[in-house]
Image (spheres, rainbow, N blue to C red):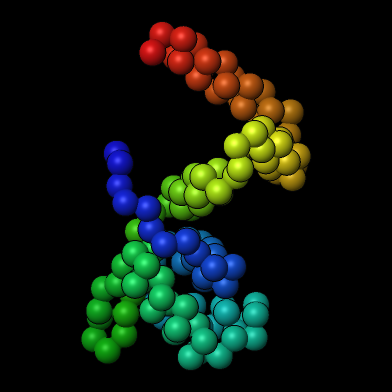
Length: 131
């Protein structure tokens, strides 16, 4: 399914999104509590990030009384894939392989992960030859 990419997340927005992904659905007060514990943020700082994430389309809200319930609009994998696509578009021609290899190295993949990656690449190559 092709869809319009969302605006990119800032490092602080990724922090908030990770909290919401972990909780799956949460009230603003839950996010305020966690960002205060983890990062020392005030509720107003967190509220600003939640607002931006809704505006960018990364979070949806449901109003319950005078509070809001936040849910991610995409899975963490979908968001990472979108971010990765954006990064690949920024890579100058000829640097893609180096970038991908760097990401593999930094990913600290297990033997099993490497085997799965190799199988995915093999499958991709087979389908590319047919297409």
